[in-house]
Image (cartoon, rainbow, N blue to C red; front, side, top):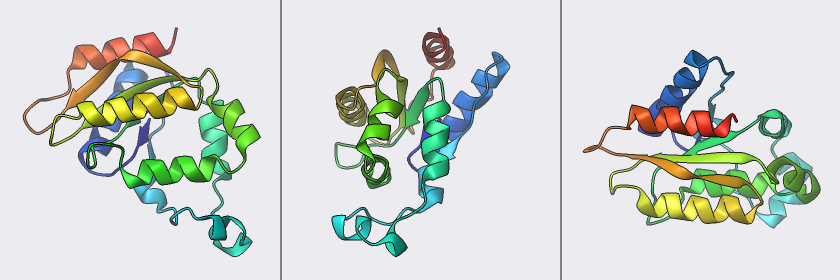
Length: 160
């Protein structure tokens, strides 16, 4: 479970993880906000002192059988934490392609505005990098709780 922000999206990631564990699957939550990666710039990539060590993140994501990416909607798209993490991950493009190609991915959000736009943006992004994004997504917000049946179905679909 990759949570792009702390708070309600992290809580939704924990719900996915606990549901997966109840079904007998290993699940880990990665909180991108907690990682506090520096803003990706070409200048930073050329300076080893400013390049973060993301090897543990790369290993975890590569070894995972599937990902569920949970992110709120920011201005009709993905939050900066998620875009930034993807930029850092893609520095080593050969390993990035190996990590992403064919990876089953589910998408979820807890957003104030419903979240349809962030789901569309993430679907486009993760499809572009070669992941196999499942059709069903989990959308929740302050006026709509996450549907437990959707969470169950997504986990079942990702572990086939």
